[in-house]
Image (cartoon, rainbow, N blue to C red; front, side, top):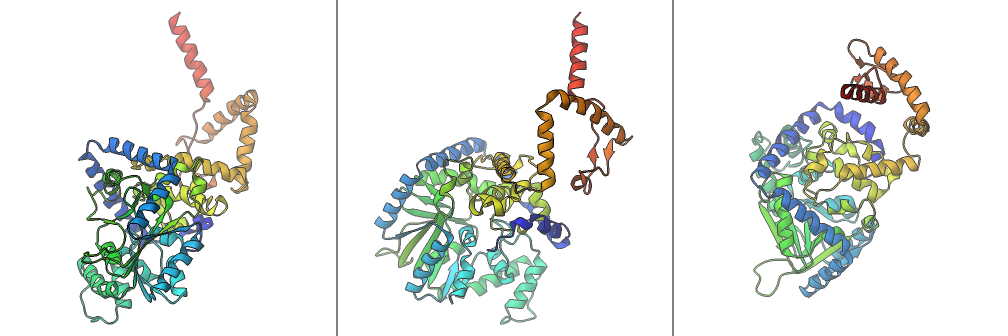
Length: 478
């Protein structure tokens, strides 16, 4: 996927002016937030489960090498193959080799953010292999030539009439007079079109929500069952996952699953939770003849031992973006790469560099809602601040705020001068605020006042008010 995150401001302007997008984004606020709240209220031990899930992942990250080796050993013992991919290029090459060995012409795919991260679809098409997305949302955006705007609801930026238009444009073999006015008819049509693709595919590719070191299993959660058909019907199943998806045992996976669906969609559990361990064994009624796991690093190991290690606890539930006021305003495509919202604002610079992704940590109000709803208790605002510091240190942010901060720092290091300047400036700004106590425009603050008023300060500084209060307290005790 082409990286466009440096264009976040431009992308956001377009998103804010897109009436259709703004209407569609209302579904995020109305759908996910209330459902999550109700699901959590019905589970008194939810916060205790969050603590436990966090501790499980922290333990794994501290011993990641050992668990990865144990997982590989169990996959091989079950008859599968493990492929290590340090970079996106390595992962694409491995998948292409597997497909060519299987003489694949068509590949079905379950929803996978890792395949988006490495740009797998375009790569397969360039090598004469046709990828077919089987998740309904992914299928819709594939027809449109777009990328997901949300990590669990790829087509949340679209409305029903847009989907109908795309189905009529692409499904030309179906009667033109058919009724597609209801969501159920759109779903039925997609199911009918995709059904034959499952049987035509030589290779099925899925992601993995968890990799279990104890058994060598991969686990996927879906609400459509497409993941099951994708990995059972083709002769070859390829599970793609990043290295931090490891959990020690099936019991650990089950514990984290209790917070995953509730945080993502407000369900107690996803409709399908599928555990795969190796290829089909003698006596099995179905399943693939070959089972491959591609483990992707792509910059994650460099996050270990740093202030960004906690980001590797992420289980891709999407709760942070579901509650983020910035995401609500501009949607996922404005972020310019695979991962949107608060988790993307931290993960993207970690994977592609602060030079390309440094704009994203600034796309935050620091309201803290993302951290408060994260099932893994990831301190997202703190890590966004760390990226802002990195951006400032390298001189990558705009000149005006950079020099403005340096000017403020010069004053802050000189308390006497700072207090003198503030004792003059604060009353002056207070007087300029007028009767409404607000500014509609202010020099050097146009980026704020262009869209909102700026409250005027009090007529006295904090230090002045504190001194007066202390004096009154002392006088009262005499």
